[in-house]
Length: 118
Image (cartoon, rainbow, N blue to C red):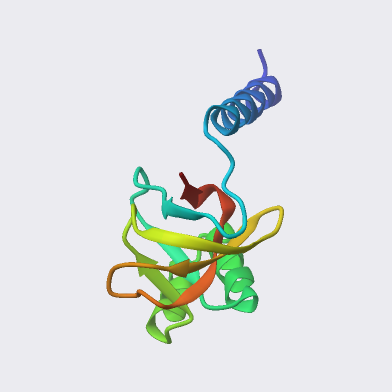
């Protein structure tokens, strides 16, 4: 098996795992209360969509300085996994949430869709 075949098999496996995970947990909808994924080590919440896009760019480029700068200026919050939130809006890849507990209670922002769970 060549390297490309191996990478393709890994990608297919990851997609299958993601689909199974989605099928096993009930869908979170706009207006629902939910939690930030308690199994995550860190959950970053962006203040707005522009900051969300900058955060994604920095993460994809493995640019730690880029996303830590967003934390320093308050455009990204590091929120505890398991924190209770309410879903305000959703797109295909992200959700707008209101943080309901903890030190950031009352703040809203955007987070990757996969981090919002029942």
